[in-house]
Length: 157
Image (tube, rainbow, N blue to C red):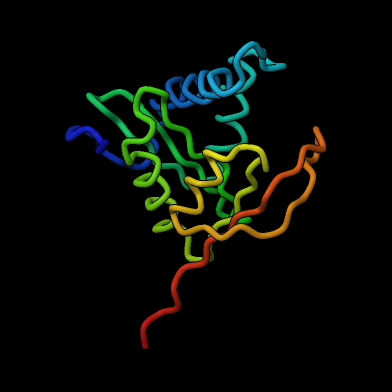
């Protein structure tokens, strides 16, 4: 299924803070039925404002003017932090468009760790041209994660 005709990808704006934080928090719970995040939404909103926004290139996807997804890629790493799309818009090309925006904003490539048992996310990243590499433990939980990388094509001479 294709992205809605009125889906737009644009750079993050300060007014997106509440919607982006709520989207992440909702997606976290949607992906983990029955679990509760250890911190309240206010904690994530402050973390987003203080640690993600100043250090990342962020693009949002909007549908009918509402935030339906976002991607955040940290400049220095280059570490892909999140690609999040609301449940109702998943599998419609929005995540792919967001990841393409992150690639366009990254001259040095991207790196992202995905839980080994998250076969859906792993298929998504592989389908978007990221390459699976080493498996390493998550720093807090110890669960195995697969490191995915993307490198930009060399410049045409």
